Amino acid sequence: MKFNPAASVAIVTGAGSGIGKATALTLLKAGFAVVLAGRRGELLHQVAAESGAGDRALPVETDVANPASVKNLFARTLATFGRLDLLFNNAGTGAPAIPIEDMDVEKLKSVLDVNLLGPFMCTQEAIRIMKSQDPQGGRIINNGSISAHAPRPNSAPYTATKHAITGLTKSTSLDGRKHNIACGQIDIGNAHTELAARMAQGVPQANGETAIEPLMDVQIVADAVLHMASLPLSANVQFMTVMATKMPFVGRG
Image (cartoon, rainbow, N blue to C red; front, side):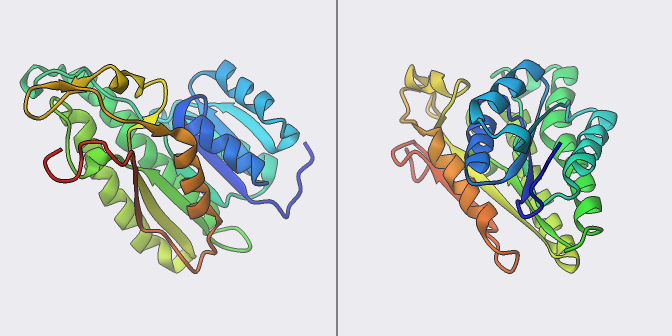
């Protein structure tokens, strides 16, 4: 596979749909080489074909909750492109919106594995590459959530993991300094994806009511990630919140 070494190399997890797909396509359009990671290989190949980026788009079927699968993702990246400049820890999942006391432990563990263990293991592998390459360094961007600030009703597993991601972001930012590794977090509210489309039909509110919530174009999120990714390593967006302006988040809704 031919590759222009002047281009920056990115890994996007959860790249088969939603925010991950939009971000991967935006990075490819901007000239990045992008490794598309996700559990559904056929979707990754569709995104690669849609991009028209040829050899700069590399689909790698990946389960971020599986240590061997994560190691394979980063090994394939290094073998193909020779370095890694950007990791977007985007893959995530949720649990049924039920009371916390009724949550099945196995379902809870599955959310923890994807939303926290996955980004943690991907961060480990990224740091190993970034601190060893020449020139040294790179950038890690974690997909947080509005839930990292304020939960929705019956969302304890998802909300807890997104709070944990904030801790991972801060620790990675601190520990990565000496290796020229920057780490930031983007907290996203109501981007119009397949998963969030239900908000246009009405979702539960803190007061017990159900209300329709505004959505924003997912491309706005992708453009925000590109902005963070395009900064020189001497600068970092530590935290960014991108949200639909009129969603019930600030104040009392």
